[in-house]
Image (cartoon, rainbow over all chains, first blue to last red; front, side, top):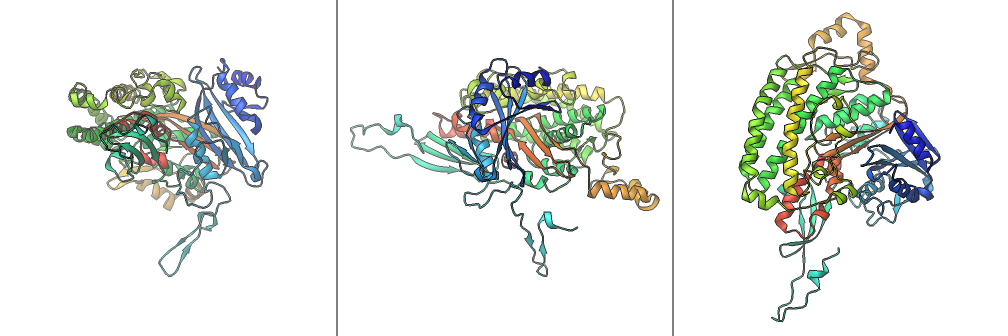
Length: 165
Length: 423
């Protein structure tokens, strides 16, 4: 199925669908996320039954600040869809999709670890890549990068975003 | 940690001895059989595995964050180090995604070279898998043979890119340079040698009673469960589904190559072995087709001077570097060329805003690159969907009712590369 045709089919379920660079993206509301994903999975013509990846992007100063994206594909029809949910800075929570897609377990833990987004209903939402006692969520754009103290003449190498050369 | 009630709840058997408690034991993160720094928290009842929890993150290097602070071209040198046994696939996924954001396509010859190097990389990666798995299951000679043949492939990589691993050979818009003059001869030699060697491996292992005993019926994962857990690559194909990105969503012209997607139905460790052996043969077939196509000369990088890497590189005795002729050109002959070089190297290229998800079929499964650009000269977000990371999630499921010795076989059959898992 071509991207335009697929977008039409998806639009019957989710109104906010865009096509860019041959990829179809559907934007859903947080409260509708589980229902829409279940619908997209169980609809025979769409059959988005495989979740490749869950991740987030951080846009400080914008509303909503975070976008969480789900890369779906269909093992039957071999087409792809991205589902995105925008969430606010002061309420960075989403329902967990682990009940629909067991593979989301580690993806959601990673997104929590790196962005601090909480997935309600996740069976074991702990850090996965960083140590348990790490403070902060390093893939947030507002996270301090830190510099390096060198042993040579007390020099300090500033963080990469504050270097002038 | 949940235990198995069937074992735990047994009453004392009347002999007056109480059942011993289960033992919780850490396997890793430095255990030699865990392929790098993977830690497994095992709960054991004697030799039986009651539960298993994989713990990852010991090799986290912040590649995704690093990429956000480098130019688009520099990102290649970072992502190639993620899954270090399949560097070309990382470069390919990243470059294809960036090219789609830019709306460009690499010239045909560059695409053939990309397919050629990826398939040789698949062979090298599967050889490491075969070698380490052989070592862990007691077939020590397999370890020697596997690394011996991998060396031939790495020699070709070194001759073409200057490096044995982490090549940064694929660039946005093509590949950095053409094959060296003796490249095709070396690859033909590999093609002549490998079929016999793969036959040798099969003669050593396929009918070997110990190999069969250690692998058949071990770590079984059904197709349904594998799909639910997001498992891809040889692990999934060993359970039935012929899911392969090269066939389902072809890139680099894979739809024009002839090859089969090997599958099995058992879904156990032996089936994964059989699938990977068959994949090496298919890769050899694709390499052969690539060589035929390379007979036609052509550019290996897009022509647009605003996109292509400015330098002319050469493989010297100490690796890859700027060719003396090019250095003379920018340092002595042309001020404009020097300015252009300086701008392209320090500032890099700007990529139109947008987002793409580009999957490629790595030796371990679907390797996805989700790139987001805000229109600047650095990626806004680089997300690597590494297949090892996802496949490792299936380990507890495969170890239900297993023995301790099976843990080694199961981990080996997943073929996890922690550089990719932890990124």
